[in-house]
Image 1 (cartoon, rainbow, N blue to C red):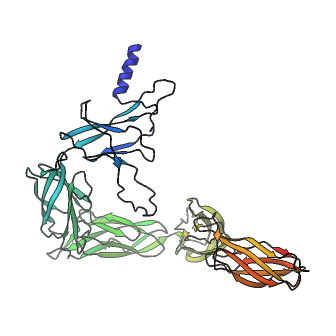
Image 2: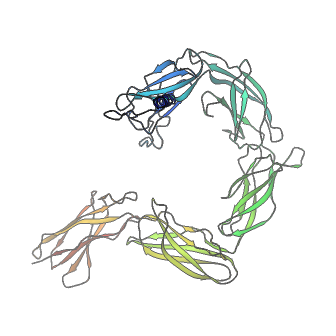
Image 3: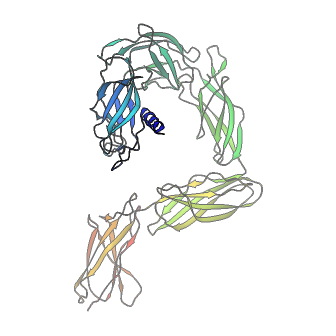
Length: 553
């Protein structure tokens, strides 16, 4: 039994497993959730997230298959933030937390294993064996790129000429890159190319003819030649704009003049994209050419130029199929009539009004199509609070629709539930499917309040001055819990004589920058004073203060 336990311990050690041996306190990895480690050919990168770096951190580098380190890295620097102004220069919500080594200087090129070692909670070594791999080799760089030829849609083959060198990371010297793998990027495709023994490439290359126009000026395609493990915008690669001869007129021929489907759905329409060749005949567009329908997404042509697009059914708005942005063909389009089958839906959005006294008025237009007989259509009025994904039903409306086609207004007046979005949605039935819902933009106003209000002195002798003071405050759309003074706003003061029920406007004052206001009157009779913000700005609610009774002697 003892031998089996010892064997298990040896196996666990070989696999890099950290074993906790019972002591007065249990040892532990201070980073139980792990960390990231990677290399870029010359540096080791580590990222422990927002946690503090472990003590006595080091990276040991071993040749693959060897247990003896050839180098140990103990010094790291913070990784520069490649985009410090994302999302903004004032508030970078995703700061860089990684660290990296200096460029490594090893004796030999080759493949190495990297172990990461640091102190555990009891200062015992924590070893993460084979945490990452370092491929230490020549670093490719494209030094020249030339594209010979000016292609057109019928003659798409050019000659790619390029030169590349490899930088030796041991001493930073460069030499021609023999038999190196490079990647040629065009719009939507990546093709491997290989240098010869002298680091040179000269090879024919044929474009697909489906590339989009990416030239910085004029019409053409962009080609980028880069090292295999680099991004397209890497400084180690090179790019060229290849101007194409965009002349042939294109034509979209649809198989039908009309499509029919329920409102709010999509109807397929097939067709063929062709262009006029140099010999005057119409030829199919290159396979893979993108064709787009209005609000219906994109599709690609087949070998014979044929395609099937999806046409959104939005009432009777005609469908549109277009070819735009091609580097090879002139733009063209075709339209198709749309006939909604039996269905009903909202079009044009909702007209939404939020009044200063916290009422919401909604109006939408419900269109019904091809009803076989008169029917009652049930509509839900729903609300989605800002920041939430849940729709809550606030009201139900039901109205009669005649046979055939019709459009009627659906209205609702409801209490204001807070900032958010509204929609009207016909629920649909198996016989009359539901079309699109009517949506509103953000419907909101800013909360206001008069938390401070006083009429003084109290009591007061008739004929003496009485002064009304208070403060008008408001929140923000994005923060309904923080209040601040609301300046430069009109506040009206009302008075109701004792024994009466009618309020009379006594005067108007304007708030100071901090929201405070003051207004003096002459005391004449007993009564109650009140301040009201009832001429609210278009985006604010009205507010009313407490009542203050003053005894006039």
